Amino acid sequence: APPPATTPSSAYAAERDRLRAEIAVSEHGELRLAFMDSLRRLAEANGDRDTAQLMEIERIFATHDDAAIDASLDALNAVRSRVRPQASPELREALERVYGNLYFDVGHFGLALEHQLEALKWAKRLPSGSRQATLYRLGTIAELYNAMERPDDALRYADMGLAMAAPPADASVNPVSLLGARAMALLQLGRTVEAKRALDEAGRIDARGAPGFNTLRIAANRAALELATAPPAEAMRAVERLRQLAERQDNAYYRTRADLLRGQARIAAGDVAEGLRGMREATASFERRGQMIDVLDGLDREIHALRRQSAWPEAVASLERRQAIWSHLFRSEQTRAIAELEARQRAEAQEQRIASLAAQVRLERAQVRAERLRMALFAALALLAACIAGLLSLSRRRAHRERDRLSHAVRHDPLTGAFSRYEFQVRASAATPERDAGKSVLLLDVDEFKAVNDAYGHAAGDAALKAVVDRLRQAMGDGDAIYRWGGEEFLLVLAPRNDAALARDLRALRRAVANAPVAWEGGAFAITLSGGAVRHPLAAGWQGSLSDTIRWADAAMYAAKHAGRDRIVQVRLTPQGIDALAGHRPIDMAQLQDWERQGFVRIEDRDDNGRSDVG
Ligand SMILES: Nc1nc2c(ncn2[C@@H]2O[C@H](COP(=O)(O)OP(=O)(O)OP(=O)(O)O)[C@@H](O)[C@H]2O)c(=O)[nH]1
Image 1 (spheres, rainbow, N blue to C red):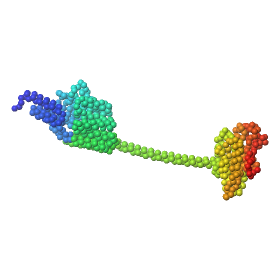
Image 2 (spheres, rainbow, N blue to C red):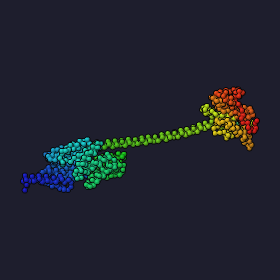
Image 3 (cartoon, rainbow, N blue to C red):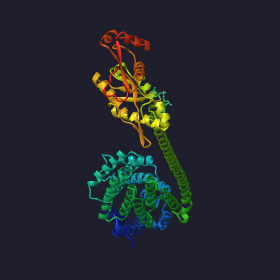
Image 4 (tube, protein in one colour):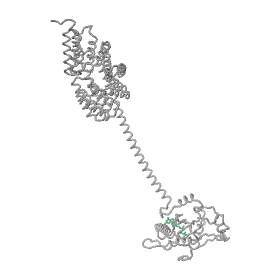
């Protein structure tokens, strides 16, 4: 017999509330499903269609398989077709929420958003627990906007929820997912410090209870944050923490998520091949389970990481794969039209991205080419410059050598190696009276040289001139210099020395030549020199130059010739002359002879000892 109208309903209500409480506390698994089925049957038996349908809907959500989402959507559509227009807000909310969640899970953001916003409206009208349901919706919508890369909207909804959850909210309100959504929105907006703060707060709140699903969620968010902001090594540590937590809670989803992020960290650390392999394994695993939002997120991360590593071909391949997944995401009749519309929109956006990426690749390649060209040009220029510098230095060295050679040529007599007359002039023009003071000039002329040429030939004459210079050089002091003054005439500039030394050296010079005959064609011939010597300046206080003094040496040399050759005659001041001629400059030969007559100078042969052949 049917139970009485009143008693059963109150008994039913009590049993319903008990089962709902059981469902609420049993988070997952078979037990929860069993409670849901009990409640559904009970509700059906009691004519409570809303509750029965609600349990159907919750069962669809609890058991849905992302990999076979169409079946779940079909089942959901079947329930919806039975929902009465005047159904309870609770049923409405559940229907929209589950639609929203299913679409969200498979990455169908547009439809998911529509349903979640609808669910939010109903959540606000719930007679009980409206606050908690509203907060959950706000968190989900924020996450959805994050997935849609609309961080401003995500932040708006997350903050709306956080404002509601702010004290004095009741303790049952859990803002962790809202804080996570806020953090991910801020991360997208580049406000990383605030993002980190939000995650820290979420971590603190979560740490008050036992580690659970939220702990994993926070760890995953943290890993994502570190990946975007921290060095690869730090990001890797965050990823490993997530991986350990997932292991401890035996959570396959977050395990795969950790694998995905680990791959990304590897790519970021430069290990592109290994990282990419890890990421592709993780996305393949998500794909097998139909978690298309994670597949797409994985591909996004892949593309991002590859672009950062400039692995362009891999990045383009990932982009194309992402586009392909988008266009094949929805196959069922009932969603194809909408899905295609959306897929087309996304595809267009993706095509634009591919086009811009391709343009970027082209640009980068062009830049690389330009850079290479620039480097090549630079290298060529550097080579050219080096060549020119080399040539210049070579030619400079050559020029130097040539200059040195020429300078040596003009400074020296090619036959005897004595300095040239030109060299004397160069030195004389650079000389100062102080530098030349005390030196003596000695002009030497080979005696009867014409006869040597005539008797033995011009070559013998040349040999004689060379022999003269060689022998004079041997007898000269270090500070003395010899110049070829004319044909067979030589000028010696002798360093300062006292009278006795000068007389001794003049004698030695003359003898060096006279005592050593010139070997010629098996025999030898003797040569002698006649010379005139004058100390410079002739008289004290005289501002004349060496060239002036040479004129008096010339006069003395003629005196030597005149006196019979093979001798050196010296012009000397007498004691009277020292005072009388001070500051005077001899002008010509006549004046010199005049001074000689007056007894101011003597033109005398001081080398009268040991002469053998002349007298
Ligand atoms: N072999 C040779 N002879 C030269 C050179 N320069 C000048 N002579 C010769 O030297 C001779 C100089 O003769 P002279 O000026 O008459 O005087 P000398 O024969 O030396 O007689 P005295 O000077 O009076 O003792 C000339 O026959 C020139 O041709 C030279 O470089 N080589």
